[in-house]
Length: 378
Image 1 (cartoon, rainbow, N blue to C red):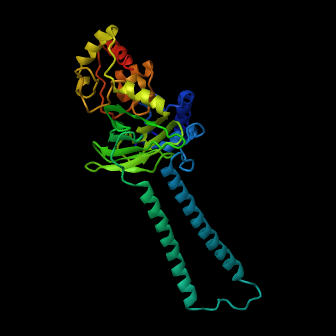
Image 2: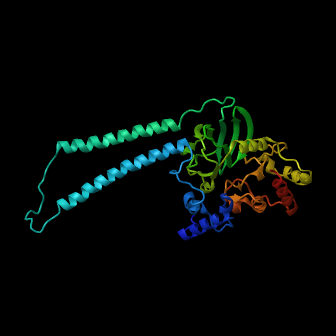
Image 3: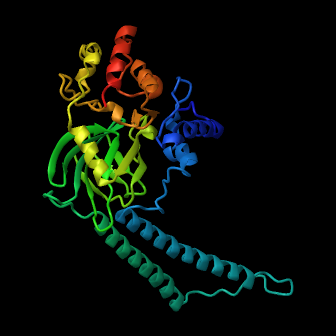
């Protein structure tokens, strides 16, 4: 935990600054870190709290069948436990009033009663039945939410994606959609088709980790599922409404855990097909950017990053083929604007301390050429 964040006012100031930065286009962005403050020590929901009026993060406002099942289970548990709380507190208050000490009572000690078989049976059987009931309901919900995905087949309307958690960003490998093979990779923004009346378009996620434990959680779409090294877990999403849904890595995974944000963009099928068509293409070739392209390929960037259609075939860092089609950089920490991209390339450590991309200290000319080239990758 970073001791540089020591007071709630500082955190609230950061949250307000973030809100002012991001609300116009509903993208998640963090103010640039100049080295004085690191917000990793605080919970992600504290930083997002002021944005909830625009970007709803409540599990009690679901937009998918699985999230609705979880919300219904939560409401039922709250109702049962709330009723128990009221009954216990009522009995306690009645006992305090009924057996209170009275000035005219000569007795200094209440009568001692040892054992009551009916009462003992009641307070043993009743909790056991309540627990058994909740276990059955929870098991049924887990069974519904964690159903095994089917195999892809033509015209199934289903999207299959492999999600890889990395420190500290998300990799999305698009496998098939509607039975058609895709085979491209994006980062940090998961685009999915939204369901239509009478037509459900499920999204089947295969969850893996490339390093440490992560957890994928988009509250309005599904529950939390961990990404564990050496293990494959699965999650199903069904977005009933179009929109951008925010999520968060929910398992502590290192210094930038709080800034490992998730964006799920649910689009109507026509827009999603257009997005797929663009993402499937190799990198855009612009003759005016040839010098910048050569400057980029001459750097060690290509050892980690991939730009399809070029010699840059690294697979360790985000795929940059269509970089500027994304709304944010650094897993949602800053907006994807030319200005912020320029700052990110110059010194990522000022924005996301501990990230695995170093500051290369490029000559000004090379830096400008590379940034212009990256800005052309739509």
